[in-house]
Amino acid sequence: MTELPASLPASQPPAPREVPLSNRVRLVRNVLPPLIVLVVAVVEFAISRLPTAQAQVWAHLLFYGLVGPAVTFFSVEWIAEGTRARERAERELRDLYGQLSASHGRLRAVQELMRDLGGAPDMGAVVEVAARGAVRATGATQAVLTVPGGLSSTARGDVPATSLPAPERSSLKVGIPGGGALALQFDTPPGPETEALAQALAAEVATGVEAARQRTLDLMTLYSVDQSIRAERNLRRLLARVTRNMAERARAGARAAYLTDQDGVLRLEYLQDAQGEGMGGGTLAPPFALRVAEAGTPLTATPAEAAEVFAGGVSALGFPMRDEEGLVGVLVLGDVRQGAFADARVPLLALLGAQAALGVRNARAYLYSEELAISDERARIAREIHDGVAQSLAFCALKLDLVARQLHADPDKAEAEVRAATALLREQIREVRRSIFALRPIDLERYGLLETVRRYVEDFGQQNNVRTTLNVTGDIHLAPGDEAVVFRLLQESLNNVAKHARAREVTVTLHGGGHVTLRVQDDGAGFDLAQATGRVSSAGGLGLMQMRERVESRGGKYRVLSEPGHGTLVEAEVPQA
View (cartoon, rainbow, N blue to C red):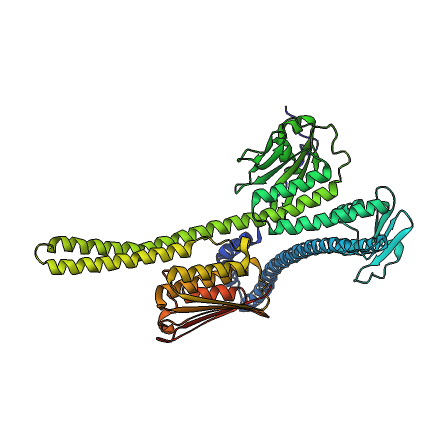
């Protein structure tokens, strides 16, 4: 006979499975009405058999006096149970929201600490900033930081401590390598995350003058890395930059990055070892990377595991990348030296890896948005070719077929048809050139907004035989996304001028102040706003409504002024960065 595990005795019955409240309510709703009818029928029959009317009255009072309150009691109890379940769910949601808010607050506090340490003028200021930062990051009511050399600083939180006596308050004291300590006081016992954060802070706060200087340098590096990876949109450059910074801190000779794909499978995305540097090509992660992902904490590899990750590797150190959505990937550092990471500053490296998770999410989101933009652009180009050039060429083909039939019967009419087809073909050639000019890639990141606008306005005038004027005034500072919107509006407006306005002169104005204002004014034919609003431009792809939506989504304003025969003015305002 197979023995049962010690943790589950043979006599222990299986735990009863709780029936959901909704199922119980449904059961009662379906069973109770017929049951009540049946019980009432039986009782009424029994009462009718009583010998006297007085006995029947008392029997009715006794029965309905008991059943009514009982049914009311159980109904209220079911309602109360549902209310309690909803209140529990609301409490859980509030707790989750509080945890997320606290996590974001701690991240902001760590970033503020990095910034403040970078600007501290001397060792005394470093100690004061570190103590205040420890309070903000951990939520402690008081922090006392001491370092070798007699320097110390005390910081208190903004929230006043409770009335508990000092011995009953929770305290946490962590030693600083090389001497000194960080003592924290809390009104409630700190959790494991707070203890880990305190250990990381203590490990990186100064150990003497040289240790404090090194800690300041590390935090400044971390801050710059954090800012750079948030803005980096190329996934390969992002992984190379993050792993290079970590490798330099740990003196590692090799590095690798594994990311989860859309199916949650961990695959190699970046690798640099003795054989060179390259992307992973979708190779499945080795067992060590999977072990780090499952543990959720930094781990050290065995020599056999390190050899599976890197060619000739003997030592390896892995860090999980996680965010609020779950596992993003795993970063692994490697080296050919035995015990190469025995003295590695794991808390700092782990924090670098954690910050990289946000950068990876941003880079992937940018790649996805690029794919959507490319798909939309392809659809737009296909629509333009179908609605414009393709139909015109088909019309030309019909005319030429007609010419072939009329060539001998009516030469004069055939010649007129040829001239009409020729004019139409020339117009379509101009239309194709306009579309090609509108689709040229423009490198805003390389040239900046002002130089890109200058080049585009100049090329537009030469391409369309229109006199152009560009006026730029004030200081113009826009976020990259706002720059793209402003330039796209300029592009659409000028394309509409080329397509519809028959203008001789166009004036483009960029003015910087409280807002950045773009104006595009032409002296062309103008149009009726009531008839044009909502249309899609065949040259640029966006109608007036879409232009307005783009600007207003950025917190700006957009308007068009035009009348037939009096030209057109397009004006957009976007807030400064």
